[in-house]
Image: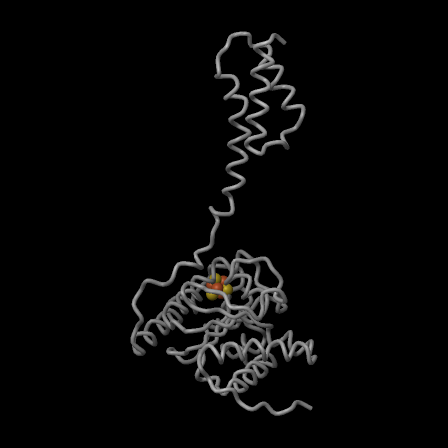
Length: 280
Ligand code: SF4
C-alpha cells in the first residue's frame, strides 16, 4: 500500500468510528482497506462507495422503531355523537357488518358473534380478549364465571353493569378458549376501535394480557403494565388482570392488585370510594 492509500484507509476508519460503526466485521474492513490501497488514483468515490452501504444500514436500524409507531397517540378527531346517533351506529355496525363477518377463520366455529353491550354514553369501557363458551351461546360478553367476577368488580366500584360498556378484541369465540391469534386480532379490532370512537369513554380498562398488549402495542407482561395510566388516543387507559386470571389465582395479592387498579379508575372519574366489606 502506498502512502496515499494508507492515508485514505486511515481516514475511512476514522469516519467509521465517528459514525459508531466499530462493529463492522474485520474482514469487511480489510476488504475495504485492500480495495482502497489498490486504487492509486486519488478519487473519493471508492471510499464513499465502500462506506455508504454500512452507514445506510446503521441509520435504517436506528430509525426502525419510529417507522412502526402505533397510532395510539393520535386522539380521535371526529365529533362526539348524540346518544341516539351512537345507538344507531353501533346497531348498524353489529347487524350489517359484525354478524355476517367472515374476515377471519374464527367465523367457522362460532355459534354467534359477540358484539359487546352496555351504556353507549358509558364513562368506562372494559375490553376483554374474546368470547368464551357461554358468551358464544348467548351472544353477550362476559356472562360466564369470569363475567360474574367482572360484575362483582363493577359493583365494587359502586356501579351497575348497565352503566359501563363491555367488549372484546375479537367478536367470535377462539376454539378451546385460546387467545386470539395476531392475524385474527388484526382483522377484527377495527370494529373495536370504531366502538371506542362512537362511545368515546373517559377511561378504558383492559382486562388481561391480549387486550392490553393490543391496545398499547406492547409485548410487555400484564404484571409490568397493570396499575399504571396510559394514554390511548386521548383516552386514559388502565390495564388490570382478567377476571379469569383472578379466579384462577384468587389470592390476597391479586385481589388487592385489581382493587387498587379499580380504585385509581374511580379516583380519576371522581366516583365515591365505597366502604369495602372485609373478605372472608
Ligand atoms: Fe369477523 Fe372478528 Fe369474527 Fe373474525 S373474529 S370472523 S374478524 S367478527
